[in-house]
Image (tube, rainbow, N blue to C red; front, side, top):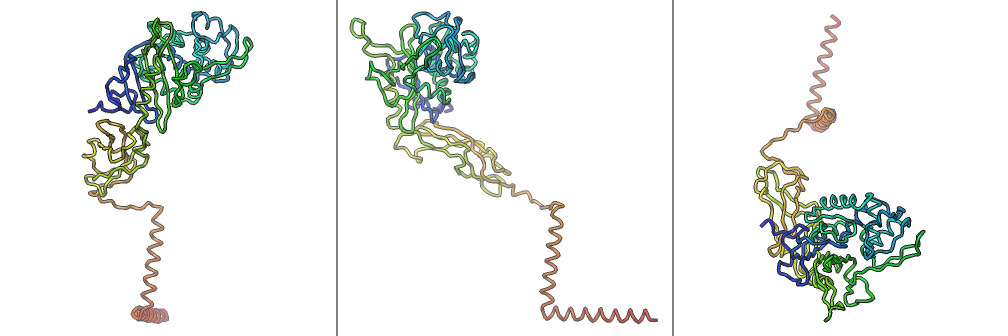
Length: 437
């Protein structure tokens, strides 16, 4: 079936099946970045409040529309609408920081005031910046999202999905600057004209924590936390193990409190993320299954003077069980190979191929001809170009000269040459006599 593919964020089928693996979350998404494989999803298109997930798209827009060393001045307009209880690094009006410092404050320290200052600098205000956010999200194919501010503070009109969050984070992790900041556990903001240096630490307990060490996970290299208006929590994480890099999104998880409700027993999202990472990493690896220029298969060509050899023009990898080999894969070629006819030129796209494993379509790509296939029913007459006629003429003369040389070296040739000389001599004598008369 067409929808059996699992090799994109838009896939409708996941590698690990469709059973509910996570109980304490409303929506989850697990994706392998290196092979673009959807490992698992549960209600991935459920629209929910994005909370601080918004800061990831704010960071990308800032990175693509400014320089890291740009000096940014904090304005009163940027700080005006922020509630006093919002997470911040206490930026001060007329304080000057670099864009890089603001990005660290926002992504590592989850500072809402830094996000507001970035939006004011890039677009002149939060509403105009939100327009950029929505345009960017639409370009990425985020069909379930709408953004209204750069920080994620509650707005009933601001929504996203786990799938859209994965699309945004996948794009962002391809940017070196974002990856470096997103994967940082702490940062020291240099002293400014208004403040001494600030030291900020990530609130992601899976990366670094002096308070809740039980959640530390060496596989986790980056993350973004968030708390929605209803106190539900969300967690976007990137983890690495072996050849795989898993992107996990957990939304709508609840914290578990001790009896009496005064102390948190379990923070929502961390246990669920660990379960997802364990499921995704255990027993699997990223393996290359197609190579650029690989001679994959040959097909007979109707009316052709030879077979055509086909190859992909891309290196394609997928997730496979560690005990699986190439013999466990099946290749399905598109129907147009049955009607191939000559001529075919090397480099022509010929057909496509799907790679299947255990009922899942792992990859799909176009195949191209590696050789020319001529139409054997057509007789080609070679007509030399005018520039080559002199070469042909000289070769012919040389050939005649060589043939005559070898002929005259034989006895028969010498007799022929002797007769020719006698005939020429008689003619010359006859001509002299006629002249004298």
